[in-house]
Length: 497
Image (tube, rainbow, N blue to C red; front, side, top):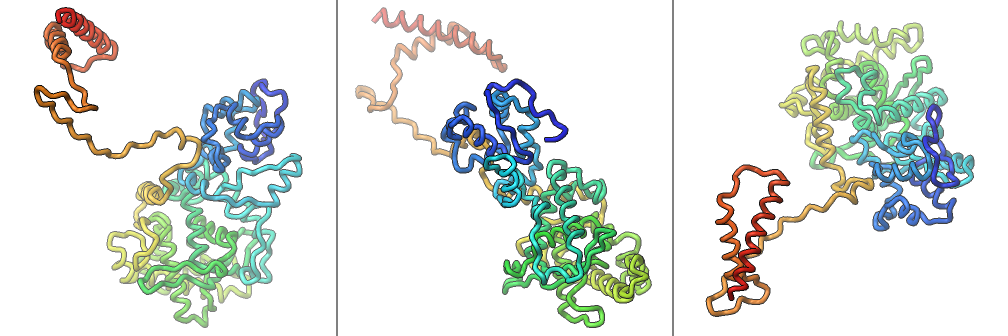
């Protein structure tokens, strides 16, 4: 609430409970109703919300796509500024995240208890529904011992987690926020929604161990422990829940792969065995890693790895290129006793990456440069090109593909205002014409002869009707004239009978 005026008008209610920073709108409305001894349904009636709209999902509907009319009435009741009220909802949220937030709810009990203690009442926080908050930045979970090395400092590691979550809090409402991380050319393809899905993709299919953390550069080093397997049809299978990483570990790994892919892929992420004990298992792990990355990386990010003869097709087999790149990536470890091993690991990663990327299997499986698993699995619609003009198309393709997976009914109070689309009902058959001398069957409207005659006389008296499109006033005048003539003829006909 800092930096914003809390009240903008004089409230209509004599007592207004103050909202807690980060509180959700539904929680605050419940506090107002409790102050005056009303139920939430009764107070919604004051806000002109129909009773049938108040369901167990009303708390979700209030924070996703709120109604402007309800916000206006609530502002007049409480005097709270409109921007403060909208700050208690997801108004302005990136549409890529809106559908995900309606199905997400992971409250941090420590944050909720602390906010409730300070306010003296139960408080529900808005961030409980924020799907990009993979972990709580203030109370991150403790990773399992197998996930973090014994000498890894957890304080700076959690500090980077907080920085990432803070950035995502802004990027969720600003689609251009990633421009400062990946550049303006790539920003249209990398949004907060795409990044969060990348985190869950890595978390479900790749298990790693944090081997080290460079606190000076906020950079972690990882070693792959386990990768996904495939079923008999070749489809990738997610890791069992007990074998997956803590979400905080996958969050940091995904961030480094997006913010600094070259260093992370070649020098910061290694397979399970050391460089002098590499086996077929290491090659399989790196192959699976490449397939995961090709599901997310657009062409521009791939181009950053291919430019400068780092991974070019012509020179990828040259040992000089690999050595030069490995030396450049491990230069800041040159005075460390482990520099020789790090240099050899970077050299091996370079050879493995280029060998897989330029292999015949990849080119055969991706003839149109569409990124999929070698055997089509659940991950699709990810373009991979080496150009620099496809980021906007990639971003649109991702949004279109994800839109097909979302719910048909969107969340928010707006869903009650959408009229149901009528189905294609069969056109009723025309009623049979009545036989002369017989009465028309019941339920069939028969037109009397004098009524039809009066309408015909009215049309003949008016003359030819205009063929061009008339304005609303002109149409009403024409109908009044025709109806008056028809009624006059109808009365005359009735009087003569």
